[in-house]
Image (cartoon, rainbow, N blue to C red):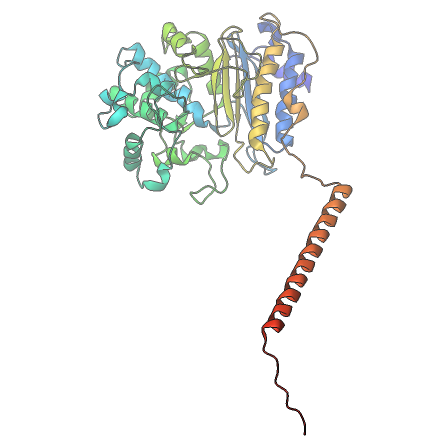
Length: 455
């Protein structure tokens, strides 16, 4: 198996994605990277997801670009290909799409981070909504709720947009952290107002096309369906989803939303990650300025940066990424973590929402995400070193993935039965006593029966 992996890695590929190099060429251990294969495979075997695409990159090259498993649980389903298999990336849309667009417009001085949202969207007004800023939307401190079931109360994308704008605050602006899809949707609308074009068109023109990300888009064409990983089998829409955004609110918004809707491949996302590591540039094309990349990926409020999350040993980032590492996760089972200190990134795409067989698929994907980051860090030979010792991973323990039903010991069961019998007996005796007492009282109240003496 190792020989096959190493052979694949020594071939530099032309086309989409980054050039591929052997791990040793970029200061990484191929042996230690094998842990990633084991971790991802265990997630599949445990029933967390049918397949996955992984790319680990360092120093401008991909050192691991692999597909695992299949697009679905059906044995005849196509095998996952990191270059070709398209996934619904869910909330990675927030950073690869919406935040990237905001960064570009900020570079062009068309957006003021401390400008009030109402100045861009006049209908977002009333009460303290007038005080909400772009920065607060980016750090999830606007006071907006996490979300609302817009798909239940609207019948068109226009109505859905109006519902987003009309959303009430749950807290005063700037006082609470509430991870909010609604805030990301508002940012998407701000991009459209400022740029004068739809969010998907803006991103295609300013980000995806210049980077050669040919497999990244909203609303993929039907002709691509055969290589798109399916998601929900029984969604509220009433039919299995494949090539249609999984998130119901994003679907209600027409499939193009600030919080979800993007589809992509692991290979495409590796180019985006490398662009970020390069300070906003890739292949001679400057997408975002270096100062803006540094500003938006630095911690701003708690563990949140501007649009991005940061690695705090939680949220699927693992324990060992550097202090400046940043990234994001997606509900469908996706993640992207970027470590500037090690010039490295780790991308994982899965469709864990597709008929997961594990009892707790969310725990499976959380552990696998974290293990991938940790394994990649352990494989770095020439960067900041992690204390030596036995490398154990969460996936090796599978804690909480498929918990066995609670078993009651015979002794406890016997005791339980005795208690039940005792309670039942006590109840019957009590009922009998009550009946006897009632019968006695009834006889005492009855008048004596008159008798006639015989003469």
